[in-house]
Amino acid sequence: MWVKDMRRLSENFRAYEFQCTGENKIPNFHCCGGSVFIDDALIVALQDLRWKCAVSITINSGCRCKRYNRSLGKRSSDTSSHIRGYAADLAIPVEMTYNEFLALIRKSGLFLGIGLYNGFIHVDTDPNKGAREFDNRTGGKHEA
Ligand SMILES: [Zn+2]
Ligand SMILES: [Zn+2]
Image (cartoon, rainbow, N blue to C red; front, side, top):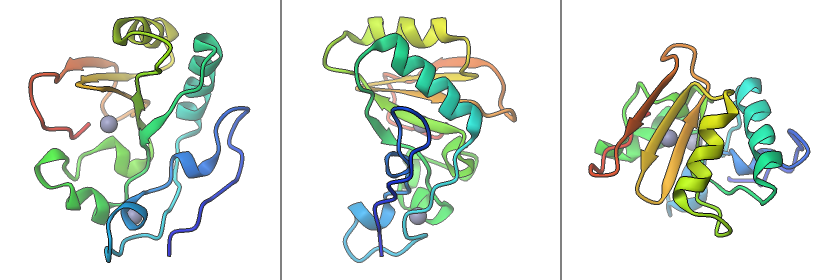
Protein backbone atom coordinates (compact mmCIF):
# COMPACT_ATOMS: atom_id res chain seq x y z
CA MET A 1 0.00 0.00 0.00
CA TRP A 2 1.25 3.43 -0.93
CA VAL A 3 1.45 5.73 2.11
CA LYS A 4 2.45 9.35 1.75
CA ASP A 5 5.81 9.83 3.47
CA MET A 6 5.70 13.26 5.10
CA ARG A 7 9.27 13.32 6.45
CA ARG A 8 11.04 16.58 5.78
CA LEU A 9 14.29 16.16 3.84
CA SER A 10 15.20 19.83 3.58
CA GLU A 11 13.54 23.22 4.00
CA ASN A 12 11.33 22.82 0.93
CA PHE A 13 11.32 19.11 0.13
CA ARG A 14 9.52 16.24 1.78
CA ALA A 15 10.04 12.53 1.24
CA TYR A 16 6.76 11.93 -0.58
CA GLU A 17 7.91 14.11 -3.45
CA PHE A 18 10.57 11.48 -4.21
CA GLN A 19 8.63 8.33 -3.41
CA CYS A 20 8.40 5.59 -5.99
CA THR A 21 4.98 6.22 -7.49
CA GLY A 22 4.40 2.78 -9.02
CA GLU A 23 1.65 1.71 -6.65
CA ASN A 24 0.19 5.18 -6.42
CA LYS A 25 -0.25 5.75 -10.14
CA ILE A 26 -0.93 2.33 -11.65
CA PRO A 27 -4.07 0.42 -10.64
CA ASN A 28 -3.42 -3.13 -9.33
CA PHE A 29 0.34 -2.71 -9.73
CA HIS A 30 2.56 -3.89 -6.88
CA CYS A 31 6.13 -2.82 -6.33
CA CYS A 32 8.02 -1.41 -3.35
CA GLY A 33 5.07 0.37 -1.74
CA GLY A 34 6.50 3.83 -2.23
CA SER A 35 10.08 3.61 -1.05
CA VAL A 36 12.37 6.62 -0.71
CA PHE A 37 16.11 6.19 -1.19
CA ILE A 38 17.58 9.51 -2.15
CA ASP A 39 21.16 10.72 -2.37
CA ASP A 40 21.96 13.50 0.12
CA ALA A 41 23.87 15.42 -2.53
CA LEU A 42 20.78 15.48 -4.73
CA ILE A 43 18.69 16.97 -1.91
CA VAL A 44 21.37 19.60 -1.26
CA ALA A 45 21.49 20.49 -4.96
CA LEU A 46 17.70 20.66 -5.30
CA GLN A 47 17.30 22.81 -2.20
CA ASP A 48 19.99 25.17 -3.49
CA LEU A 49 18.14 25.35 -6.83
CA ARG A 50 14.86 25.96 -5.00
CA TRP A 51 16.35 28.98 -3.24
CA LYS A 52 17.79 30.34 -6.48
CA CYS A 53 14.49 29.88 -8.33
CA ALA A 54 12.46 31.38 -5.49
CA VAL A 55 9.45 29.42 -6.75
CA SER A 56 8.34 25.90 -5.89
CA ILE A 57 9.81 23.01 -7.83
CA THR A 58 7.66 20.02 -8.74
CA ILE A 59 9.33 16.63 -9.02
CA ASN A 60 7.67 14.53 -11.70
CA SER A 61 9.70 11.45 -10.87
CA GLY A 62 12.26 10.76 -8.15
CA CYS A 63 12.96 7.27 -6.85
CA ARG A 64 11.87 4.28 -8.86
CA CYS A 65 12.25 0.74 -7.65
CA LYS A 66 13.48 -1.63 -10.34
CA ARG A 67 10.06 -3.18 -10.76
CA TYR A 68 8.32 0.13 -11.37
CA ASN A 69 11.14 1.32 -13.59
CA ARG A 70 10.83 -1.83 -15.71
CA SER A 71 7.11 -1.16 -16.06
CA LEU A 72 8.03 1.98 -18.01
CA GLY A 73 9.32 -0.31 -20.76
CA LYS A 74 11.39 1.34 -23.44
CA ARG A 75 11.32 4.68 -21.67
CA SER A 76 13.76 3.48 -19.03
CA SER A 77 16.33 0.79 -18.31
CA ASP A 78 18.03 -0.94 -15.38
CA THR A 79 20.92 1.55 -15.63
CA SER A 80 18.65 4.46 -14.69
CA SER A 81 19.98 6.78 -11.96
CA HIS A 82 16.39 6.93 -10.63
CA ILE A 83 16.75 3.34 -9.43
CA ARG A 84 19.61 4.31 -7.14
CA GLY A 85 18.14 7.58 -5.86
CA TYR A 86 20.48 9.86 -7.73
CA ALA A 87 17.95 11.48 -10.05
CA ALA A 88 14.89 13.67 -10.24
CA ASP A 89 12.80 14.84 -13.19
CA LEU A 90 11.75 18.44 -12.66
CA ALA A 91 8.67 20.06 -14.11
CA ILE A 92 9.27 23.50 -15.60
CA PRO A 93 7.91 26.03 -13.05
CA VAL A 94 5.03 28.00 -14.52
CA GLU A 95 6.73 31.22 -13.42
CA MET A 96 9.62 30.80 -15.86
CA THR A 97 10.51 29.59 -19.30
CA TYR A 98 12.25 26.32 -20.08
CA ASN A 99 15.50 28.12 -20.87
CA GLU A 100 15.40 30.31 -17.76
CA PHE A 101 14.99 27.21 -15.60
CA LEU A 102 17.72 25.38 -17.50
CA ALA A 103 20.10 28.33 -17.04
CA LEU A 104 19.64 28.18 -13.26
CA ILE A 105 20.26 24.42 -13.25
CA ARG A 106 23.44 24.82 -15.32
CA LYS A 107 24.66 27.64 -13.08
CA SER A 108 24.12 25.61 -9.91
CA GLY A 109 27.24 23.52 -10.37
CA LEU A 110 25.85 20.96 -7.92
CA PHE A 111 24.31 18.58 -10.44
CA LEU A 112 26.39 16.06 -12.37
CA GLY A 113 23.90 15.09 -15.03
CA ILE A 114 21.45 17.36 -16.82
CA GLY A 115 19.02 15.88 -19.33
CA LEU A 116 16.70 17.93 -21.51
CA TYR A 117 13.33 16.40 -22.29
CA ASN A 118 10.11 17.78 -23.68
CA GLY A 119 8.28 19.30 -20.72
CA PHE A 120 10.78 18.44 -18.00
CA ILE A 121 14.45 18.48 -17.09
CA HIS A 122 16.26 15.49 -15.60
CA VAL A 123 18.96 16.24 -13.02
CA ASP A 124 21.18 13.79 -11.19
CA THR A 125 24.15 13.44 -8.88
CA ASP A 126 25.09 9.98 -10.13
CA PRO A 127 28.81 9.45 -9.44
CA ASN A 128 28.85 6.44 -11.73
CA LYS A 129 27.93 8.56 -14.73
CA GLY A 130 29.72 11.81 -13.90
CA ALA A 131 29.19 15.28 -15.29
CA ARG A 132 27.33 15.33 -18.58
CA GLU A 133 24.50 17.07 -20.38
CA PHE A 134 22.28 15.53 -23.00
CA ASP A 135 19.39 16.78 -25.09
CA ASN A 136 16.69 14.20 -25.67
CA ARG A 137 13.92 16.53 -26.77
CA THR A 138 13.45 14.81 -30.09
CA GLY A 139 13.34 11.24 -28.75
CA GLY A 140 10.96 9.53 -26.35
CA LYS A 141 13.39 7.36 -24.45
CA HIS A 142 14.26 8.30 -20.93
CA GLU A 143 16.72 6.13 -19.10
CA ALA A 144 18.92 8.58 -17.24
ZN1 LIG B 1 8.20 0.88 -6.37
ZN1 LIG C 1 15.17 11.28 -15.16
